[in-house]
Image 1 (cartoon, one colour):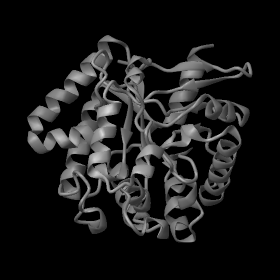
Image 2 (cartoon, helix red, strand yellow; image 1 turned 30 degrees about the vertical axis):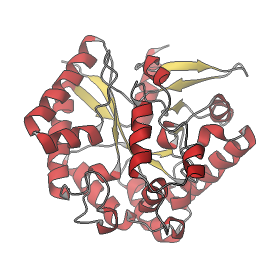
Image 3 (cartoon, rainbow, N blue to C red; image 1 turned 90 degrees about the vertical axis):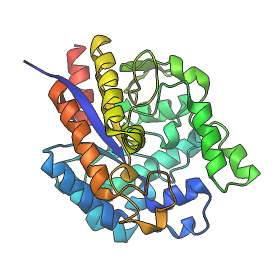
Length: 313
């Protein structure tokens, strides 16, 4: 049986970006755990014979201490994407000129660090705008992957504000974080944005459960596994069943804290889910990948994009 392809990607958010999101003092010293996380995740991916897309933050690519580890990603045969330069989840509030600078700075740093030119982009915090899409199209990016079609964005934002130490000004700056209720009406399948300039760019949404539009990326599955591994598997199987009957090919999302625990990154032990050990997280991840592999051929997003474009012609 010829399996349909599905894509796997990881947003390489660093220690400082989690601290920045949380409003913690010291984030602007740019502390990094990439020296711990990258060898860890590459070992796990090698064991699974899996090649994925890493969306890299430009500021990290500009840090000399991170360079050997970022180069390990491309040297291991994984794909590289652009995750902005400053990793600010209010990117949609930037002017077009500011967006151009953000994308260019990140791209230049990522090329220097990895030797790969990214041709896909994901906005931090699923942030995007028409100006962003125009900039990406002008720079010949092949796809954007910034949308998360779910109705629960406002609830996620409220929870985030409740758990953070942000000031009123910082909360105001982040008032559109995770999008609005209407994001749930967006398509789960890839589609083209037709832009005012006459250009177009492919959108590959992060997959949520079809019809219900609730997330099932690894962060959510890990949370459920903490309640019951059986409950987690049921939720995952429902998600994959709904993808199959609606002919939705998953774009499955990972974050670093999905695969590493407070046992290895003690500075982030206070974050939700960091009380779960790295070994347990990896075990859950392998269970999820086994279920995905049974149904799909798993590839990076660049390969998924190229196959999609090829199929349209």
